[in-house]
Image 1 (cartoon, rainbow, N blue to C red):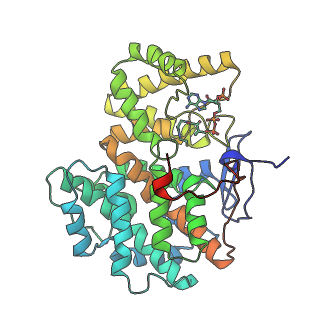
Image 2: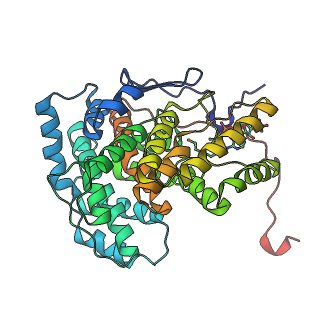
Image 3: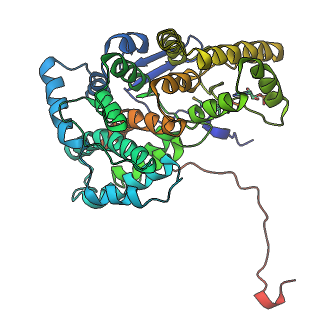
Length: 380
Ligand SMILES: CC(C)(COP(=O)(O)OP(=O)(O)OC[C@H]1O[C@@H](n2cnc3c(N)ncnc32)[C@H](O)[C@@H]1OP(=O)(O)O)[C@@H](O)C(=O)NCCC(=O)NCCS
């Protein structure tokens, strides 16, 4: 019997030094550090250094990384034009994927996969992807893009480029925490796609473009958009229970923001974001989205327990209410995931290019056999 691993479940394709996940204990570790400690204390840039170089940066290493990032937020004028000419209503993930692909045309060394060049491309994308997401949101709303402030880090710069004003320290910190939590997650679908793409020794822009396409799907990063879409369509607390039961009664019905291939208990990132969401609800006086989320968690818990299944909130569930309270349109939620996950994608590309083997799995053929060719005019 040929063994088939649908969805590559349980398949180890390689070794990695970057991230470990214990799905039974709800543990997520970046290069030896527990995600709870990093979310509590680290900036996104410190986490980028950790993921890319294996260690938290010294003060001077962090300054060097920030210096490298300063010019990276600037976009080629042609890419801004492309975003401006993208038809109104085009989903931001389509625009982002297209713009990142276009960036390769403005890089003379796009195909150089040496370690030094990959690090240069990674730093460039770490600034350019948030700049694209912010510029596109403004252009679609009929506003001019806001030039980046080279003195700000990724979280503050992104908020400023979206809103056109200096972000508060509190908002910047929440953004930083969200970026830290989304930065890396092992061999998830988009990271696997990035590594598989790079394994043909094509360029890193192709790999990141492919990863963005994968992240966009509703079973992956697109779920945070799906969560807010569901909450908005439900409208109020009383509507949550009938909505969940209705979804579960559908053939293959999925409640977005729940379930995970690896975690059997609550995703530790969801636990952290739940706390952030609760605090923002208290501070803003707008508890609606948090309370509806809590109710959805309660109803899902009861329904899944009754079925004997372990389907708990994942990272996308509470990030939806957090982003809502930070003032983002739901169309921007998945692009925010992408700008953060660029850190993890690039860390994996460094590993992949450094010790590559072409990824080439097989499919077990079950189609027709032994047919003979009939010329077109003789086919019935
Ligand atoms: C993430 C996800 C794709 C994982 O998929 P998977 O590992 O292939 O697991 P399955 O889809 O086979 O689900 C296992 C069981 O749990 C149930 N389940 C999993 N997630 C569910 C959800 N969100 N809503 C309802 N039921 C769910 C399935 O019905 C399935 O039941 P079955 O065994 O009786 O068929 C899946 O949980 C999902 O679709 N979640 C919603 C999308 C989402 O939030 N994605 C973001 C992930 S970070």
